[in-house]
Length: 152
Image 1 (tube, rainbow, N blue to C red):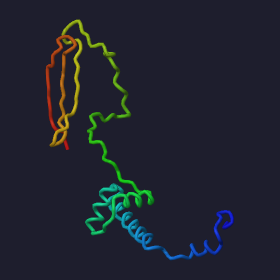
Image 2 (cartoon, rainbow, N blue to C red):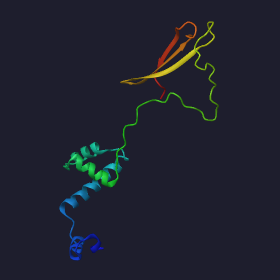
Image 3 (cartoon, rainbow, N blue to C red):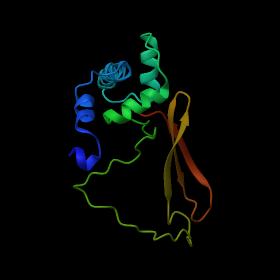
Image 4 (tube, one colour):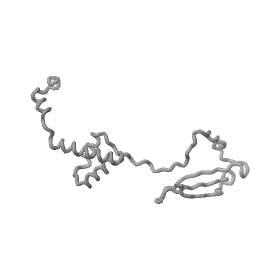
């Protein structure tokens, strides 16, 4: 093996039995602490939060070092899930409603086609739901609006 790697036998054994360097030992200890913090956060903490937690414990190191050690350990924080409500919860046991309009929004008489829609508005206090009903196929006007907060 030494011939293949083009190193001397004595150099290989000297390297193999050499004690761990101070930097390698410090990286090992820091890596162990990073793994503890990451698992303590249920895998949610990324580089920034791990770095902040280490600084709070008076362990000084750079973000790049934390990132390198996390990468070496195969750790990654969870990104923010997109904050978006579910407006439709489909019951898979029931059939999909047929599309009766087929995108034909014209009507030849009043009350022939009614339309409804629901949307949400992201506010600082949470989501506000807005619903509207139109007899707009004939009159092109909104006949009802409603709003409210989701039920908890």
